[in-house]
Image 1: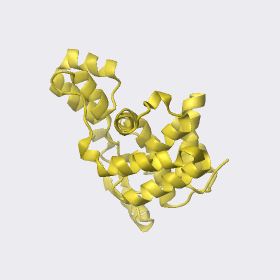
Image 2: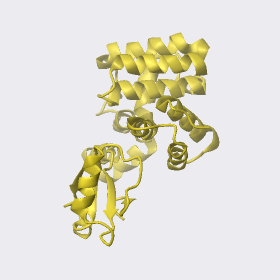
Image 3: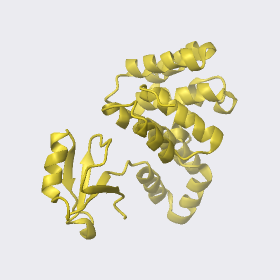
Image 4: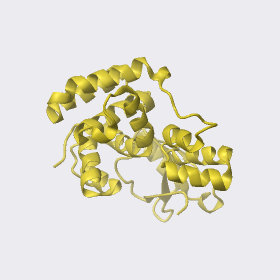
Amino acid sequence: MTTANPRRAAYDILLRIETERSYADILIDRELSGGALQGPDRGLLAELVYGVLRRRGTLDHVINHFSKQHVEKLERAVLILLRLGLYQEYYLDRIPVSAAVNETVKLAHTLAPRAAGFINAILRSADRERNAIRYPDRASDPAGYIAASHSTPRWIAADWIEQLGMEEAEALARAMLATPPFTVRVNTLKIGREELKARLAGEGIAAEGDRTHRALDDIGTRLEGTAGKGSSGSSTTGESA
């Protein structure tokens, strides 16, 4: 079932990932194919799902700081809603904090009505007191620090520190959180790169030619914006493809 609410769609997908071990990309594609989400909401759905998955370790650390109940004891619906609200508060500058809180609480009234007040209190405290959040000491507990600050599983952080040292391990953890650019490969038998860029610009999508990888120099184009639909003469790809 598809929905026109990107936050509700993100919640449903995150719930299925946890309960059914489903794959995010398949669920997102299925939701977008339903056609209920339009325009920027399509991009917001993907951002919320992938963002919460990427930042889950840090989000849970923040929840633990403000909640008397540890994340492992929270109801699954409550935990997912808190993660969604906090991700918007902390990582999506284009969404006002008031909107992030209000929309999350509105969902809570439907999905976890008894916890709506609790969710509202946690999200508002997390905004007011974000500078008071304490992380593990970087010197005495480096693996714990990376795990909480950069959402890296503690055992992986410890392994990286042992092999690479603290500085490189933290740099690697930070790089793993970076959002890769959305890239298309141009089929030059059907359309030229500049023509495709002009067509995308007409749809409000900024694109730039890739100069990072020589193999993609003539065919790679990075996109900024929401590319909800494929364009004729191109196909999506990762830069390593």
